[in-house]
Image (cartoon, rainbow, N blue to C red):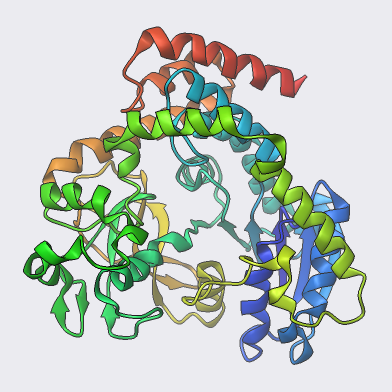
Length: 436
């Protein structure tokens, strides 16, 4: 089975590789191709993949390349982990936004809009090349912003695709913070839906057969005093839970909308105070250099304890992308939470808009598990975000300046034309400069 990793120089892909190699009965004689515009980093990841502990029992064939067509040819799965412009472009856009009082990341706010504008043309090119080189393959999108990329590929190509975000399973950490359930927790049965990073648990989500929301209301007065409550930002989440009558699924990303100004001020302060050595891009460069040295060793003792590789291992819940590949390969119909177009998945949300919801994963498609977990109060917000994201995709297709600015102004937290217009001038100038 040929699995191609795009953005294959990313060290975090090693967690997915590890999960693949641990399942020898499923991924027989895995052929792993790491494609990256930086072939040196791809070579590092390929070498490390051969030297991780799980490779001793299921040694993979590996290849590193900067040739996209060769990497795609004959692939069964294409695992997309690219970041167009790198982390430095994201840092630049976040800094510009913060100067004008706006908050953002790689999946939210002005910086996400510009990342979409950079990435949509590239991902569509990948999908179109897949039609030639691996027409039966699935495209697994692990690149942010996941929602807009799924939308672009689905509406403009016939390539089968699915959006991946392991964060939906992090609700288990919130439960552990509040109720000491442990992680992973086999007694926790949960599901949910909404938009990626804007979703909620379903009413039947339960711990030891007791509904989680019942537990929260019964112990409400005690939760703020729990020793790990700060770990799930209960102080910030509690007012939203009280308002919605439901718990956010994905680590409370709703805070981006309801605490926007506070977070924008905090981000601006962080941008002003940070030096180059503290930037995420600088940390990644240091980790890449350390990893390159490790890759030259014949054996790596304490593989996952190495500084450069810490945080790269899969979470206790496994890797969602590997679970998707396994279910497709075995045609087992496993129920997983992924991002896919809304066709009966969630009522009252835009038809066809990518939603984060449970599906049964089959070899030939995704079967929705119909739910409606979106609180009434937030149906308007979710639909506004969904329409905004579609506008961003359409503008990214044409690279039209006015259309992208219009999409920016449709984002619910962009409430000031006076600040947004000059901010966008800066963002667009940087975008055009990078494309010259």
